[in-house]
Image (cartoon, rainbow, N blue to C red):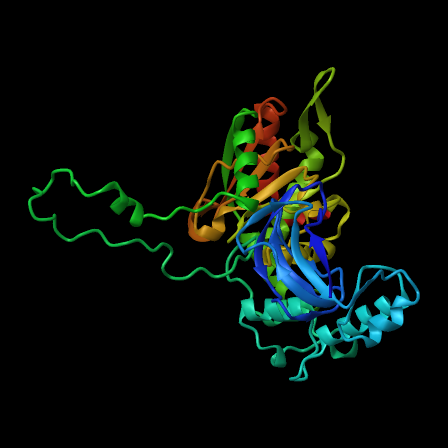
Length: 446
């Protein structure tokens, strides 16, 4: 029997290490090329790692929860003979050998046929619903019965959009719909009801230090959370932050969202007030381009780089940490295309599988603290950018309209800015422009 090790690859963007989150195979399992062998977490996202070989799993060389560097052997495969896939003679053996031959990546027709059949097997299930594994996982996360979803894909395949459409829409303003948290947010060991014998009430206990350690929990800082923490510290202590905010009557925004949800043109698209906020930010950037700039250190000194495009970032709070994927060239998208882009961003962020490329190159960010019921905040600027907009919760409050107090949907727009790049006049005008669109979305038709 021959063996071949598979080392942790660079999954992109020059990442140097990753954590083995969960193995999807065990020693002795038969795998085909592109079968998922494990999930790894990089500093950017959660990634499914496909098998580069067809054969039998020999040994799992790295335990779950272990962080290893790129190039470290993580799994071995065994076979009677090791044959390189590009060799033409190896292709038939790969098709008929049933795992006795270990085949690597290549352009041989046999490997292509195997990948095609593997893809077909991954789509069709024994219960008759046609859906790929990621779609099935999404349906489980959303609590959706796939058998009740109307498919729109070819051959009756259920697509992501079908699952999302079937799921109930969020009732209030949200940007990223994170997985539901349990009712118990934190679990701690209850404190003793009375002081130990011999210890007076109100005096310090002489209990051993290890008792305190036993009643606490250490959470390793790694992966996405580590990368996010480093970025936030760098931003907070590098860019001089200034925050301004404005209360806004967003009633007409809520009316527009309601009309879009009822429109047949948006029947397959998830619509929330974030869509209007995103359009408002893009509109306000065009009128105040400095908020879309960046402070850049060069060999010849610092310079302010103004970007004439908008890669719109959306801050996403996920169980694995903060992600800020961005929509490239958002300024060129129609309302409907922007809504679709927000939907795609939501789904990948929710799954924790936003690709690294989607998290780089952002020019300005929106963060929705309203999803947590917060009215306002002072967000930290995403590194490489000069501004971030925070949206508070939208709720009915008393508001003076034409001299009368009426119930209106009110929110707060806040913006933090790098004061090296943007002065008070520009930042105030920008926030006022965003607020103006939320108060009167019809301004977007200019």
